[in-house]
Length: 267
Image 1 (tube, one colour):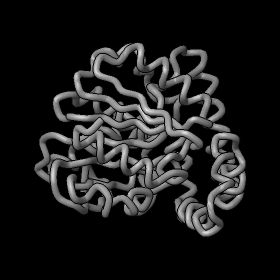
Image 2: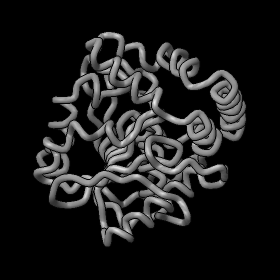
Image 3: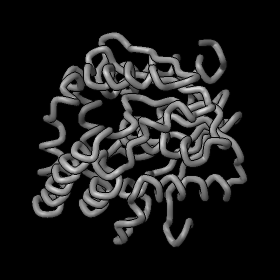
Image 4: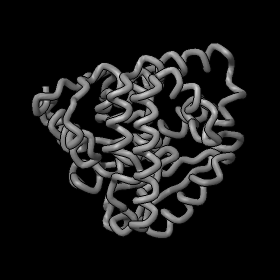
């Protein structure tokens, strides 16, 4: 329990703590396939981010801001008596991971960002995106989770996931459908790209090691990573060939090896 919010957390493995943050519509089960891969060298801390999975669905929108979510994660780590961590975040979880590293720099040793961004640079961009996120949040509340998932699965960002085996796609869809409409809507409004601060000018202040991972076919996020690299003091960037936005699903074996090597100083 953190600030009257029940946060669901899974833990597996032993070693230096690794906090794993899933993407929008995901949950902790995103990372459970990697327990056997990373659990030998890292203690995996895997929460359901607010608005998702088994974490309590708060009615208070303020709880869903990305800064508030980072603060809740910090309190979770304090309860677990963990003073320093590595963090891996995917997409929305990557934006949250970066936020945590900026707000609590002394607590982060290594930061791994999969298909993530520091947010939008200009106020105009953020305002436009916020209006889009509010519209989508209203759609989720009014039309329901199934209609939203039907739409979400067709956006260009996930086009490369069509090549995945039918069982894998079925599992991902089931996970998305299990989320709360209110939770996802509040997450979009509070933690969406339009709502979060722009961290572009803070990137050069990061003292931890940073690894950016993007899929070759995810052109938008490859461009973002290229731009981020110009501002990072201790940055590395790996492009995974033949993959799109969700590298951890589209090429799980390669993804798992890259992360293990990085955390073990083999990169």
